[in-house]
Image (cartoon, rainbow, N blue to C red):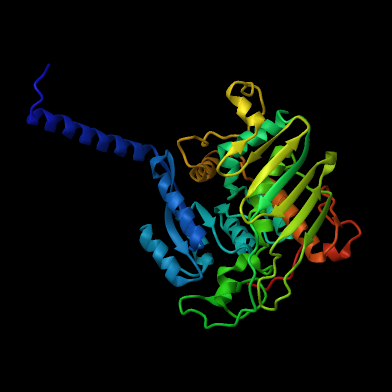
Length: 424
């Protein structure tokens, strides 16, 4: 055995370090970099930025080269944290006009999602847009047309589609392991209550009119700004927030990516506080689909998940677990090789599913393939949630024709498919 001297140890470790450095250099040379602009640097925007930054170890990686936010301070903090070479801006139009961007990640409040996405695609950028994709059903049609016209990759941040247990749940349903699917019970968080909110001075770093954008004129207060999701002018409450995730998985499992409910009823009490949150604190919605399928969406302060029930078994899935006899039987009775599969190659037990979702988006930019959370499936998922909110706001059952995407003989509901927006 060779004598292990200090000189030999230095030689060996030096070679290891040198080899590691060479390997890393070669790895970086083989990488394809997607140059990203971040639109919206709030909590979710910064979470996305962290995830984009973590793709640096992969063959296709993202690099944030520009960032903007209506709050100048937030934009500057994002640029400083991620070493963004460009100056921070409050105007997303300046960002999308840049020639050194391949794609944008949109993490604005919901009422800006469609406008930012449409403008970005028109400017030649690929788009990763946070959920829900739209504020209204009509916006979904505009986005579908834009994706087809521009040919740009468009993916929605419904990252549960890249999570293995949700994929397995859908595989079990679609491959008949629950027998004939009968109903799906979905739980989502409750909506907060609050108001009336007093007007407050606008922070010096915030462009409040730019934040309002296409929404109606309103005075600033932090609750409106920070709790936008719970005011119908800017969001749809947890029905569209968590519903965009869980109803989407239900549609995927049902094979209804290109369809929707035929009748929706909602039991909810809408707040009547002026200048306050106006989404219902709790609600119970029933969506009837073709083939006698039923989705029930209820608020639950303690849980968010999906229960699939068939005539031969049931399973429950959320972001922590997949349970139920059909799931447990996979260990000794796996699905056959020719079974319907819903995964993509970026899904791995070694990669966080949030990162997998972003890497899949980058793959689609490179290959031109359709994303796992594409514009059509996400329009249908968001639309089902919008129809549910319309039923709750009207306080009655509504009929919905998924083939024409209309409310037959219902002018009151039809008037809520779109909404007036200010020019921006």
